[in-house]
Image: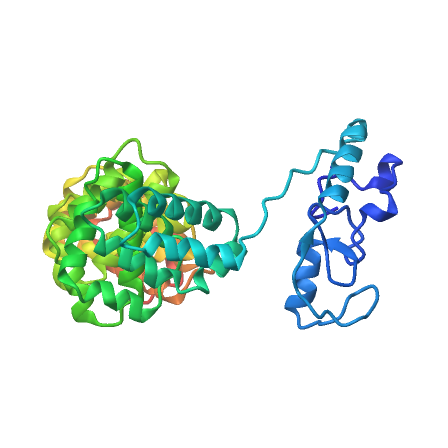
Length: 416
């Protein structure tokens, strides 16, 4: 049953769930039983969904819910856990003890304590760490924390307490779990001191702090409409070096790679500073790391490669890497339509600038890939890029190539 710890339906294993262990809404084994003001008990996720859809009555009694506080039924939960243990032979696993949701009063108190400049250091640090733990537990907790203007408080702590590294670091760790609104992004982007501080945090001794800094940079860039403010961020000293180093670090794990790629892509959307990405070694790092990325991150990496291929220094840097052209050719039709489009665009830029890249592409089998592409269900934009690339490479094909075959004659390529 979905949402339970049962390996297979109970009617297949000859076991019935006791009636009072079932949620009256879902009819499934309760994992986190809570009692409402009418005295009825439901699974927390079910009753929260019931209320979230606009219902204001108790599902069983139909009596109005005068109070939407859900009280954990610890006694029933322990009975359910004991029953699960007793029936492990039937493939039933013990339900874990649920983490309790954040209490709004407690959240408000923690934020007040964390932001109290006159308070001792340790209580402020403890409050931030408690908030971090709550935010990590669930989306609901993050929603409760966010509803108390937490982002504004955390931004203030992070940039006002730069003299206290631990407070700033903990505030950053909590802040990156929330999406900033436009005014919050601009409050950071418009302050050169804040931008410089974020850039410096990319070189912190802790890899976690560096990743969190990169995450906030990407968040701010994505949420800032002003092109001038985005340019101000991308022009910060060594910001590209810090992001590229996260990607280059062999100890980087999936979250680090994901955030590094997203931050680099956001920075490279600013056209006038793309040369700084090249100077920081982004081309070689992107090629070296491409195979380590999942689908979405590989798409962003390929989009970044195409952006950097639009400037001469970027083209030269990618062309100088022995794996660039073969890897881009191999990527066509392999990852996704978007990835194919970006790879074709990057190859078009490289081959337009270098006959050597043209020869490499042909040797890597690009002709077959492009012919397959123009006859596939890929995007029209990708097909146009493929057709342009085929035309560009026509003079590079050997005389006995597929270009003189029947396959080429019947392909959907516009006449040259």
